[in-house]
Length: 102
Image (cartoon, rainbow, N blue to C red; front, side, top):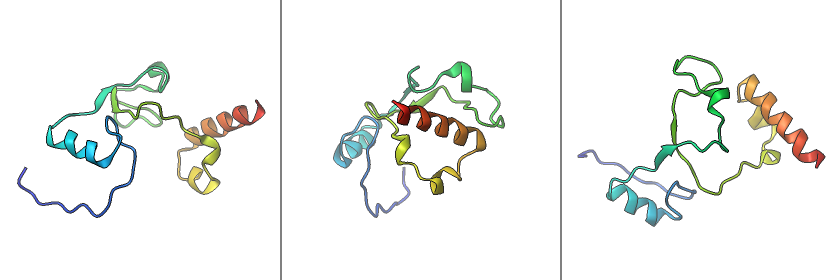
């Protein structure tokens, strides 16, 4: 890689790295964090479609997954939700209704 890049700032959680320093070590070592998606993250029977144009589906069987991360749907605001597809909005609202009823 011969192109120059500028890193303005970093603050996040990264797959296979607990800090920006570990992320840079992974980048320099050319490690890839992609692996098969675990079944508890995504049921392929429900969402996989090899057609890249299919709505509300994934055509990839791998992802860079952050271990131990769980989406806290209750923190999503309506402002954020309106940007999602109608299918995903309904699924998230359903999950929010279930999590608040327990």
